[in-house]
Image (cartoon, rainbow, N blue to C red; front, side, top):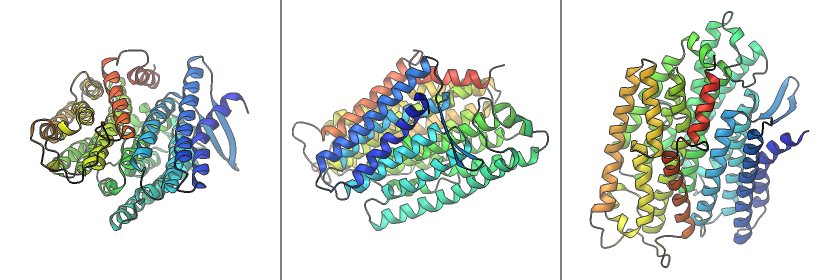
Length: 498
């Protein structure tokens, strides 16, 4: 095996080895567990940075073994995978720091962080998979490793939420398996390629390819929370705040959206998908989800549920950008993969801070919270304004390219959907901000904890301050060479190359 192959395995195994080590630690080994968590997350960041540098130098990264006869296990680093693995590694370091502070005095921490690290491994594997079989393997591992995190608290509500999550995702996984096996029977192992890998089948298997595409979208649409496959997501909000951040910004819903990007761009190819007539139905499903999630968010008093329905809406921006034919919409969808992640993880970090510090879980309990926790509320405010699409923040960049791409593709209805969604975003975020900054605080918070001179534990405060900086950077410096937008433009240019 060459050195580039070892690097991919190193990125994958850095979190896996960390998880194995943590499982064997006793609960009282708090300091060692913390250092192992941060070391594993830090090593992954360094290795991903080395991957980016190698790609910049023109290196090719690949690893392959035969999983079973005729079924290869392959890893690789193309433009799509690098975008996702970089997002995952950066946000996972922040989430690890946050989770250590959040769970400091809770039981079963070794079990939690063991599965937490395995979940990192599965998401990294999804990002680095170079063919459908490898992708499917890690995609199902993500389901298995995330379930213990959702039910971590062991309450009746947590177990019910976990059961609903498992039911949805296992059914979705079975449908995805059927799609992979069916396509494999037609063409053999399917490797991800720019502009698609199955163009030769269109003339002879048109009907089958349309049905297989539908199966792919149904299987992946569960984790991507496309309506009506989204029902598990609000129920999973019983999980601890780090898990909620994990589900919405980095792992599960993002894995589903990333999978749809892979199928459209790197399995079918946009030209083939357009020829088969499957993109318009996908765009309509995404458009319905965008509006539905925003409307449902309006009526949620529980803060995490409001954010959950916001995720249902916002993740479908990625699907919508993928389904609207044209490079500009593609740029908007791909860059929103990153922008939604950094904005949504900030919001969930802040929601966790309110819950842990003040015992505040509902929007109706947030009067004057900005005076008690100004830095946390500042981060929440910036992230919420970014979600609405206020310039010059990250969300504005995504929506600008999506709107422009829809108009260029003569899909004016998509522009109307995006405009309606932004108005609805404002309708369910601005009342929170008004309450937080302008209403008088209560005499007593539901369950307040003091942390010396800090407004909350520093390990809970630092991560949202870091991610809110990323939101500002991704918007203000969107046109720089080191921005998510620059990478999205590179991918779109390759997918639509003449």
